[in-house]
Every structure is written in structure tokens, then in C-alpha cells.
Image: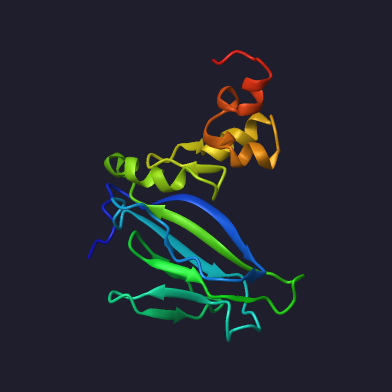
Length: 180
């Protein structure tokens, strides 16, 4: 049984930590844009068992739209693809100085034909660097912005300053530098 359409191997696209201390409300979403199918997947696993298990877990919608709950356990992981609608369950870490931390991997097909759909999700705020389906490392849009070292101004970030590198950054354009 082959779940991911690969030529030779599964490709790890990115790895990062998800760290949480508080979730005041649900934020149901799917990690992957429509079209990625099962050729791009997310895997999440907690770094330890946390004392808070009556809340602050993973909520998800089953195939009928019913909200269900997954309890994180050290040594176990959950893996999901395009249509998996989920949210952090409202709640909080017992101690704000001891956040809940999870190791997260995105991975999937090594086939170039799927990359245009995969990159629509990966080229975002999750990681500054990723591996292309070919295995070549590249910066994401936020990675290019950080690498420019131009501005850490939250106003610029909210204005879309990370959508490209320095020549597209609003602070540089305001400074009258040439648009390359």
C-alpha cells in the first residue's frame, strides 16, 4: 500500500517546534492547501507527557464533521494530510514557564509534479528554511525576509514585508533604495 506518490523516497520538507502555553479559543484549520492530497503530510509528537490532559489537546473533525479529541502522549505521533481539520483545544499549560512543546515534521513526495501545491503551504511562517522535493535546501519567504536583516518592525511584518526579499520590503522602498 503506497500512500504518498514518490519516485524513490519520502522527503522531509521541514522540521520545527510548536510551543504553546495558552489557547483561549479554537482555531480549526487544515495544514495543507487543497491539491496537496496525501503528497504532503504533517507529523506532530510531544516532547514529554504533560500533566494537563483534561484540556489543551488536539481537537479534529471526523469525516462527518463531528468534533473529536486526540490526546497527545510521549512516544506517539499523529500524522495528517490535506483535509484534516484540527485545532488546539482551549486550555493552558499548568505552569506558564513550562510550555507544551511538540516536534513537528512536514514531509511528503519527492516528485516535482506535486511541488507547486506543496509549496503553497510550506512557503509561510512555519519555517525559515525547507527542503525542496529534490532535496535542495531553500529559504521560505519569511526566511528571505529574516536573511535580509532589514527590519524587525511588527508593522512591516503585518504589511506583508516577508513576501519577498529586501527589494520588496516596504522599509527599503520608503528609504528610496532602487527596486531591483
